[in-house]
Image 1 (spheres, helix red, strand yellow):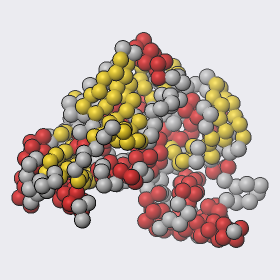
Image 2 (cartoon, rainbow over the protein chains, first blue to last red):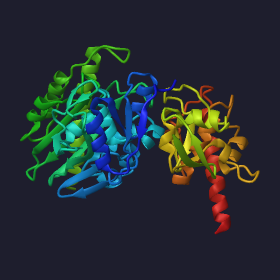
Image 3 (tube, rainbow over the protein chains, first blue to last red):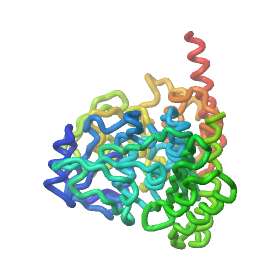
Image 4 (cartoon, rainbow over the protein chains, first blue to last red):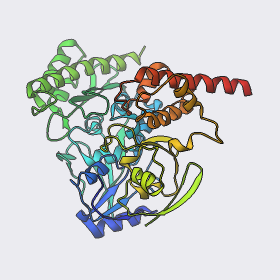
Length: 292
Length: 160
């Protein structure tokens, strides 16, 4: 298989990228790691007129802490998140999710921003970013927007990103309290898309109660789902088995799975519930462990 | 369009259509058929090459993405008629049955022990999880990579 013909350009500066996107709009497609886009091109599900490769633009890769945020360049490879061990303790969910994305070779090429913008309902980063309350920095020739992850995912492969925009950075807030999180994923084999996955991130206040809770669900709906009712049921509560079980039940209700070869809708909904329950236990244990 | 890159130590400048896949460029244009096409859908890893030292799937890479990069294929492993430690390992432990996945397995194994000279069995199995051996000969593949890691460690100790 090979793609339909396209024009290709690899500008060295972001301004050129933005100008090309402004000029070509929906006819252009941004190429980063290509691990989702190239398969789509080969299958001819996508046939853009022009590919704008952002591989030569400086400043789009790397992970750094700044002003209470962890800032992840949009072109940072999954592999580089996987090895960012200093995130342990503050953003466990990122470190737990990264090694479960596809397989090691894909993780060497595929990028965090690319995966988010591709917005596969079974993409892992969407659920993770919803759980940690990330914001996305997107740029166009006319300026910059900072878009919250909540609301960004609109449907299968559909986001709030405009045709003339490119994502440049992911900003994850780092809370001052004790935090813990994890990512649980059910897949039939390494490299398969998730049958179901859940991202959990919890911050405890100084009184030991849950200060903030983030829960993202993967592959159980038309897009990554933020389980807001479950989150609300946790905030302000003293962590307990009952509180966790109730939040997990609400998270299961937030899932909108469809039956397919990976399982029935009932099965997937229940896996989502169980994963959130297990994930919350792990997240809270980790957050409490930091105090010891 | 023109794309210039280094492959197995030699600089190449080729004229390609932008839609050319790297695996096709290597096999057809450069005539190096050690890089295999298995699934052609980013699943099997038969087309693995090292891109700036990291294993990637060359069926999921466009030729222009090679500009200015360094590529290693299985043909680039042996140096001056001497097999690389990873090749010695696959030979000694019989880390292949039909051999179709072997170029990819060796490149992944080489990159793995360069990044992690003393991998555990788990780390090796994790490291090769993007490469499928449809003969299911994983036991000996793991042993082959362990063999190469041990040989490299002994070699380094010998030098020091």
